[in-house]
Length: 156
Image 1 (cartoon, helix red, strand yellow):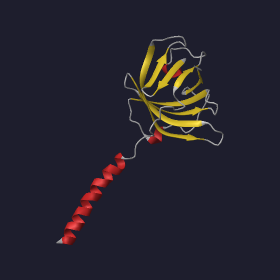
Image 2 (cartoon, one colour):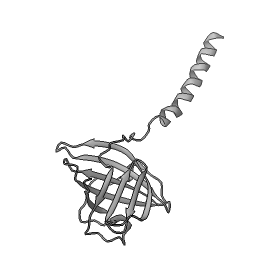
Image 3 (cartoon, one colour):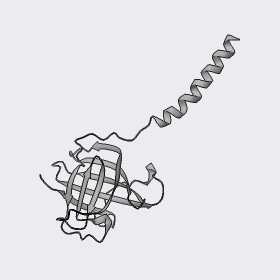
Image 4 (cartoon, one colour):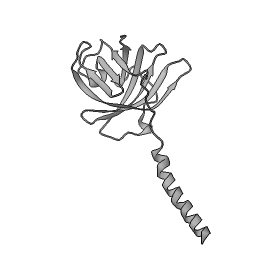
């Protein structure tokens, strides 16, 4: 009888632990001083393409896009989460990030922030209204592709 209870209780514990293990695998926990935070601009971009906004502000609350570098009224805003962060052998900081815009569209991206912290290159993969998937992240940055953008940090 004791053996049966022991086996049964062990089975219940394992069944409960499996979902908790999946839930416990959370995204990267962003810190207050992340390198990706700040105001990023590129005056070469026009504000007609949402993925090439000339001004992007990233904060712990998400992101905001602007049509012009001097604008204070946003054209888009949304959430930005991070799956992972690492530093390469040259000292550049990389992020695998995912976002949701105000219209509900999704995308996944990789971001490379230069060792100096002044240049941010991003390769975006739009998902439309599709689901986030770890296999959907771009694996490289392609400067000649439509999903590429380069922005420069605005010093305060």
